[in-house]
Amino acid sequence: MNLETLETPALVLDADIMERNVARLRERLKTLGVPLRPHVKTAKCDEVAKRALEGQPGGITVSTLAEAEYFAARGVRDILYAVGIAPNKVKHVQDLRRRGVDVTVVLDNPAQASFVSDLPCLIEIDCDGHRSGVKPDSPSLVDLGRKVKNLRGVMTHAGASYNCRGTEAIVEMAERERSAVVTASRRLGIKDPVVSVGSTPTAHFARDLQGVSEVRAGVYVFFDLVMAGISVCRIEDIALSVLATVIGHQPEKGWAITDAGWMAMSRDRGTASQPLDQGYGLVCDADGRPLEGVIVKDANQEHGILAHRSGDRARLPHLPVGTLVRVLPNHACATAAQHRAYHVVRGSSAVEARWERMGGW
Image (cartoon, rainbow, N blue to C red; front, top):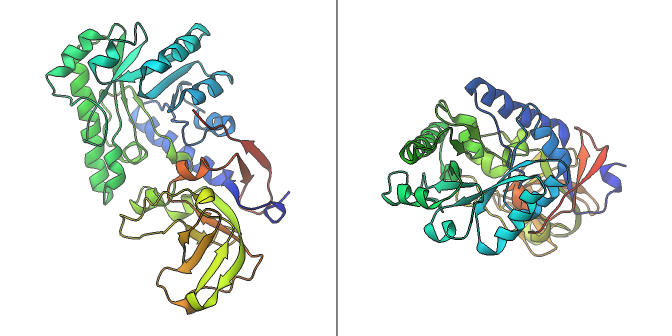
């Protein structure tokens, strides 16, 4: 099989690039002396997770209990469910634990503490005002810790790192992330606590992880345009793309139309707030080489509109009907979630495997 034989749109994964990305973070964390607990919400695939777990203790992070079920069925026995626990999920977690899966849940308020029973828990710490969590210096933190019957430690996620401009800003955010959980852990006074941090940007640019017991990251396996836009990776480090076919033109507008709209790319416009807006994705030729200045300017459900970012009609390359293009995603997690499988290549058009993905909640 090769790319020319696939029906489009199709999700393409360059395994050589992915494996380089995995090795990059593995070696970096090795020098810092901290293990990785990969976040598999990006991959949602056993074949990808196996590669991320090479050389690591074997625990994973998930964002849905469907992911926990999927990976538990494939032998993973140490799982952090890193979304705040809801009462209607406690029974499901208890069932997984009865089957020998060590699932830890996350909370940040007394209401959650009242219904988690004896489930092992981490308190989520707010290190950046991005979303959930307790401030590390909040008077309520210690009181919350007393209410949790089986408190294992603390965790945080520096989601605001995605908005950083320049690597020094990411370095500062990484230290802020580390300091927040270390401070919180000391205040709680837990013996041998879990002190968990994680985001792809901070994992790559942290200079000191003293006091941290594990790092979580997910999108690093593929990278994407948002990560390239904040200098965490290069365009050539993006392992994931959507294969699409040119199906028509609007020459007076300088458009080429493809069969990959927002159902194939997702509606994520994460680069819109960055200095370089990549539209719905950066367009490459069938071999994965970027077409200079060409982006998916707009998208309907099943139609992608390709144009030169300048708006100059004359600068759109000749793309006859039937031409295959590959579109790099803004957000790998969101784009991959639109597809059932990865079509695996290694720097060529030959498809060496099809790796199924799971989905849902």
